[in-house]
Image (tube, rainbow, N blue to C red):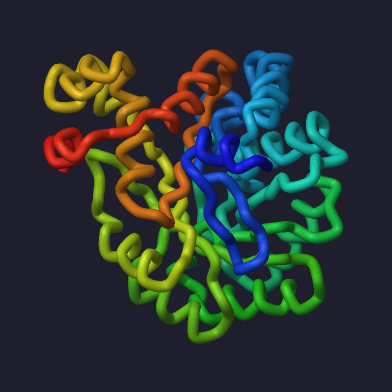
Length: 284
């Protein structure tokens, strides 16, 4: 992708020393139905969102087997396979959905192996670009779960390994076993509880994918600093949050998700905003 195009999407980041992607990705969780359960309310629009993301230059799409469950992965493959060159598909395993209200942990080696195989089938891939442990299982030693991902990597079924919803200690423990190229934790302007993990990722050159990056509910009707900065730039509060995240750290890779083409275009446009030192100070 030309340099100008990458700059339009927040610049570039290298994942695992061998794959360059743009620093604004797309999170495919919201492509599933309400409550991240079942089929999308408008399947045609969901497919348009995916196609438009590619047209806009997005080069990383993040999903998980639990989204739907299985709906998001299936939709991605139906819409985008065969995948365009340079597109990185990231998925996750380790959470199960027995019903809409439940997100159960399952980090057992047998489950993770079966989950990875199922994701490979749904995504129509021989190797998953980035496979992430969706969350550590409190009933399974983290080392056992990570060792299974390392085995799948050795078998050629996973290209890179990432983690999600981890503490700093868990990240360090996992890295003693295998290279970790990404961490996906909750992080946004209102919730910075993973600041220590972000700082570690910045030190070690690990991509940090903040989930729930926009915290739209928190900013709805905002009349404070975010609104003031947004007014100066003629932007929405959500767009300012995207720009703030990109400025926060060079390893930050926001993955805002939506089921609307209009919202997708708004999110991508946010990567073009350049916040001043005054803006950043006010938002700190």
